[in-house]
Length: 113
Length: 118
Image 1 (cartoon, rainbow over the protein chains, first blue to last red):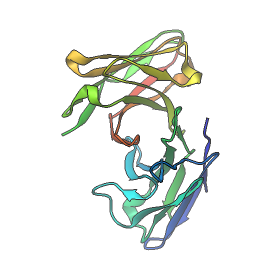
Image 2: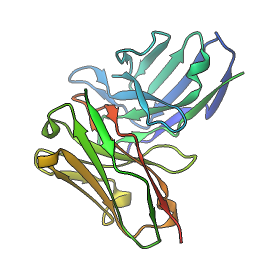
Image 3: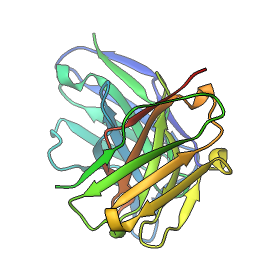
């Protein structure tokens, strides 16, 4: 199974500042046939299902604010929130969809400093 | 619009079984895999398996093999997740999610809380 490891486990950032969350996979999740990284980022707020933010590692889902961006390739990935807003307080998960079983990172809790 | 609507809260005793439903609407049900993901209180997301609504094909996470059964009824666009021999650590919110063409999950059900307690 591919193990997804996020860092840090929790993060406190001031409003308007940048938040950076990292995700590392235990093996490459890059499909060389189409040069796409099979990684998604989700945001989860209390009492709600996860919400898709980013897929293919860097493609922003429709309707997601452009302060959210994804980067990385192979085994190392980053979710960046530029200009943190109060509504961004949530737990963020990465997930690989390169192979089955699908696996998630353990989550990163983002709070306001 | 695409919707996945799950069945309601369940309270079960240890050793019992639970069957959670996930009714799809707003798209061609047989065209997209349905995955099941659970989340224990205060914990992260745990993938359980998927079902191909077109032919009933399934894949279960090793942890749940022998205890979980995923089925579907195409006539009512509904997928089901049946979990047997429940224990207290099966207490969780169970989600269904539709796999998009790329493999990620754009659409999720609202979640079903299953509580296992004597």
